[in-house]
Amino acid sequence: MSSPDSSSQAEGNAAAELAELRASVDSIDSALLHVLAVRFDITRQVSELKAKHSLPASDPQREAEHLNELRALATASGLEPSVLDPVFSLIYGRVVRSHQDVASSHQFDASLVAQSLDNRKTPSLRRS
Ligand SMILES: O=C(O)C(=O)C[C@]1(C(=O)O)C=C[C@@H](O)C=C1
Image (cartoon, rainbow, N blue to C red; front, side):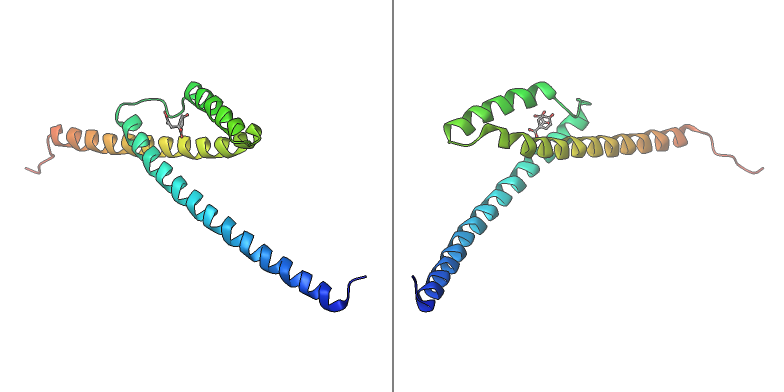
């Protein structure tokens, strides 16, 4: 049987090992966050491009094809491919919403410009 001393030492070792593993998890999460921020920065440019050219916000075929490529990559990296589905469904959902928001604000801007051009055409009512 282990003495109280050796079991508290084992607990201390486990706590130290857990802290070390958590530090690794934390740095990986920071890297993930950074990569995600860069991805959203690029898809923000896609939002602008799609809004400017009135392209559809969502492209299910591109999503399906890309997800298939990623599934193959996941398998090759020893990852269970199904973990990708909820992650990418969330990412695509967010991106499509951003595309829609940017498209609406472009439409709003365009209608304000049209309105102000229209107002300029309307003869002003002058009092005689
Ligand atoms: O590639 C596009 O057309 C995008 O809008 C980007 C993106 C993505 O986040 O990867 C987002 C939405 C589309 O449905 C497909 C892909």
